[in-house]
Structure formats: structure tokens, C-alpha cells
Length: 416
Image (cartoon, rainbow, N blue to C red):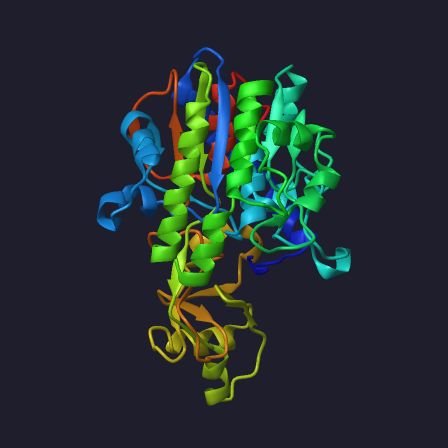
């Protein structure tokens, strides 16, 4: 599972709020314009965790057997990458995709809550400070469903299997889901699929849940989060043999869902972040120790930052040197646009295939949480179905996705 990434204060979040809302409104408008006044359709949103946009763009080069994803790119609308939000990790990103605002506004600042707030995951809907699409859909009389979508425990969703777990093994423990899902729902799924109530909820059983919902409950909106690829990409690296196998398996499961679709339902395939192979660790603190520079420096695996000009100058001198792993200083204009709470700070990102950390022998792995504009590090968006124009979209921002989903449902969202 993912590690915690970037954190910042509530005061910084407030400073960023108005700018983020403006960006979100612009994103929502562009999404609605893509569909115009099209007839309301049903919508299945499939999130494949960690599905880097290169899996779709470079499918031929990678030799991927993904007929269903290829069908989406051949017949539907798909973007040349999605610029994520800070931090580029699962729970903040999924919350942005259904609210149309950035983490500073919707309040899901990481996968885990700060220790001073009690720690643990942001399991519950009460932690989400912005209104999500599924709330608006239900208020407008649409039937809603979610399978393993983050921050949905106790959400007002008609058919809900929220992402929640106490134990992790070959999936997420079924016992936790039995406790927090819509009463009786899991038993109904098991009646259709006798293999469903296994110990672990995995992508196979998540797909069984979606097929049940499509055939029996027929919601207007279904959100499903497929997780298994992310685990393989962390363990063996993205685009590795193991990760490709999991991505191809996700494609098979998408095919099963598509076979069960009603004629008036569109499919959106999205992801929460890109992925990068990690070959080695490098510690930029060594640059400071070698030169005897003392000062404040915050380092996590994917970024280093300081507000101390002397510290920044020392790091800047070593940019491009392999032992320190520093690729570049992120330009101030880029920081202000992407992560306004850090305006005035000096941010540095690691070289390609490098994470910041104390060097030690390690196997190749994969990671995310990197700067959203890192080269070729993008999430995925594609839409397919009735009324969807076949087109190749330019790069889009993640805050625009909620508006694009809402337009298919015939909803104005986020509300103006």
C-alpha cells in the first residue's frame, strides 16, 4: 500500500481555497461543453489504481493485450494524460475526481489523517469538506452505487461497498466490508456469485459486485475502484511483467463489466496518478553535510523543500549530480500554480527513477507521489458510450473530471 506523502497546514489550505475553486469551475465548464445538451445517460466510472497514461498511449510499444481499453481509445474520447493534484496519491486524487476541487478544498490531504487528528485513513464521508458528485446525483433523484471508492464509509449512496479494511492480504478483508456496506447487499451479490464471500475483496470480487449492480439494481451512477495493479506496480515497478499482467487482468474485468452494460450507459475509465520505476535512493541531505550547511529541509521520497535560501543554494549547486539525486529546482511560477501553499519555498524533485532517501541496497520497485508536472507522469481519462464524440483530447487537469462525469448524467456540477 502507499506511503504518506505531503502535508500542509489548515492556514495554507485556506490561502489556496479561492484559487482552487476558480480552477475547478473552469474545469467543470470545459467538461460540460464537451457533451453540450446531450440526453442524460447512465454512467459507470472505473478507476484503475496507478494506471499511468502510457499504458493507453503506448499500448502497442508495451505489447499489451488490452482489447477493451483499446476499444475505448478507438471509439471514444480519451485524453493525452491527466495532470494530477498534490499529493499524487490515491485518496486525495479520488476525492478530487468526484468533487472537482483540490485537496486543500475537499480536505483529504493524504491517504492517512495527521497523527494530531487521530491518524488512520480518511475512511468516512464526514471527512470530505466538498460536496461529491454522488450526493448531487442522489439529490436529483438518480440511483447511486459505489464499490471500493475511497472516503465513502457512511456516505448517502444507495448501494455502497466502501473502501475500508483492517487487514491486508490478497486483497482487503471481507469482514470490514460486511460491517460497513449497505445492509444485505453483499448477501445478494453472493447469491448471484457463490465465490464472492471469500476472505479478501479483490478486483475479481469487486467486478462481481459491479456486474450484480448492473444486472439487478441498475443504478444511474456506479463508481468502482480496482486496486490490484497498484500493488504490483509498487512491488515490481510500473510496466514490469507483473504490472502489465495486472493491467491486462484489469482489462479483462472491464470487459466483463462492459458486457453487462445497459444500452444507455457510458463508461469512464480513470486513474488517480501516474507511476515511475525506482532504481535507487539518494539523500540530498548529504549535500548539506558535506558543505557544513545547517538549516531547515523537509524531505520525503518524492520531493524536498525548504524556505532557507542558504539551504536552497547548496542543493541548487548539486542539481544533476548522481550522488544527490536532484534533478531540478521546480520554478517558482510552477510552484505557485500547482501548490500555492508553498509559494516562497524552494522545491526540488529527484532525478528520473530516483527517490529521496538514505541509500541502501534494494530491488527495483515503483512509486508515485511525485510532482504532477513531472515528465510523462500522468493519470488516465477516457469516456466511451452513447453520445460520446470520438476524439483525442489534449492533456487535461484532474479537477475537470467531475464536471465531465456530471455532464453525462445531465447534471451541472460543481454547482455555480
